[in-house]
Length: 328
Image 1 (tube, rainbow, N blue to C red):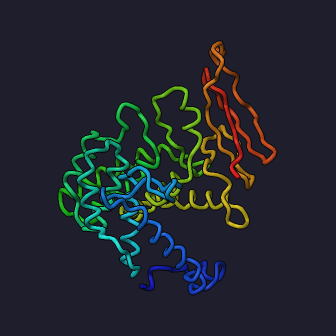
Image 2 (cartoon, rainbow, N blue to C red):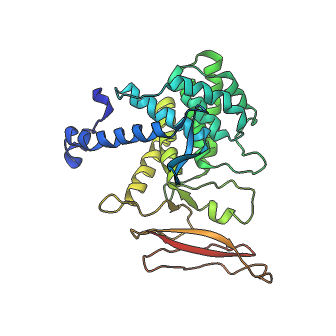
Image 3 (tube, one colour):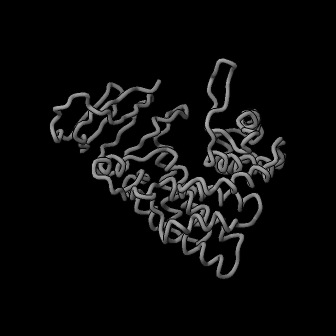
């Protein structure tokens, strides 16, 4: 294994232990991941499954996912590059993934495929780029009007990866799309909370109050990484500052033992500081069984659980009840 496979920043080495100790901790996790992912590869399809579920004959793969295949290719390629034995033909899987790309219209999935192709081959597949460009001059989920943080982050990263392996007019084209994706993604970043919302650019009326003020963990992680990549490529101080503050913010949500406080985070100014208890709480809408429900329900001003979960300024849409449950 190359030295770069497991590295501890010099300013943290005294806090988390020696690089040897960290490597001893990480090594079995990487080995477990590679072994598990090998079992999740669907040989007949040439792609990775969505999940594995227990069945009558033991665990069995279920569904097929282009998105997870692209993400897995990125991870396994990184592992192989750092000397880990990967018992799969990654370039063959990439070819299958690119061939299957026309089956999706999700720009986030297409961006992941382009990113994976750039990482594995140092080339941009023209079919995948064309599929991305078919969305028009900006990203918008077809017919939905949602500029979602995670998908925008994937698009931004993919455009930067593509720009770094191309030259001339082609490089300029990818950089222009990266600038556009960054501007759209920045709209989902709340500078006061230093967190990314799911999206502040939603056409649906009743989901706007929640989705514009709540963010998810994947959005924070990919948002941080995409801003950091943008800052590195374009020497942009603002993007680097936003990435740093968001990283510090999600670390603030960690418990003393490193446990997270939940996968949903308050991003808007009208939301109180929430999710401070170790047990996570999930929140969702449940359609009301009663036919005579009122047209509008009063806003929730302070709904708290014994663990300390608080909400402010949220309206429940007509015909729905708010449900909450503790995740153990």
